[in-house]
Image (tube, rainbow, N blue to C red; front, side, top):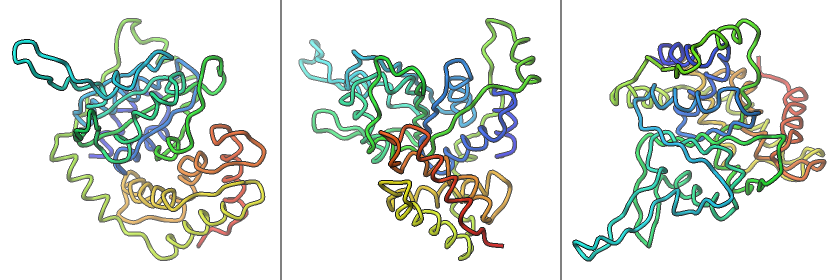
Length: 303
């Protein structure tokens, strides 16, 4: 089932197998994905194809400076016929929510996502409502155009399981993209049923992680807390995130057990935005990514 979903996504997002693997891993680990990249490389296409693949509802939120928290969570609307208020849900009540250019909204609006991303519920006027299951936020931000943007709060960055970049396609893939009909919207033709989804979630929970792999994972995390390039290392929440991602990634690779290479592959996308480098102003830059890469090179990998 995972291989079929990967094939379906690769029929929409050309030449980006590892990006597709990481996106599927994020869904299976019940996490959220931050894509930091230039416009036009397929961020929206990937999010929409993910929603199609898991047969879920897709919603897009275009973050702008005038966006209000209620535009995301929903509002209470007065019904004159019944003389009472009824709740009108916002776009956050979807299975895959695309937060486009998330850093263009002020922190107050960005914070409207925090409860949903962590607690899987939304509270409006003192009433809490569950978001659908599964629930995945795919947020995008432009790493170069900082005019009119607000840095993501560190607490919100920590809610994203991974931060990745899609990058430009290779020449062969760009030819396929170029030849697509201009008005044709790529469709993922592979869809899981609800039972398929729950079966895969259960399979992730059964993936085995040997003690040597666990200890290697902990070595990487704990090294970030004493590294001279970092002012702040990875928290225990980051440890849990990497553990969940490793199990899901092993399943995506067709294995019922994790290996040290899974930790190596996932350490940068899972941990790079959770550390605070001494040389940079925020975790949003490449300083944290570079430091985690150096740590991986310094630590011996279990045989």
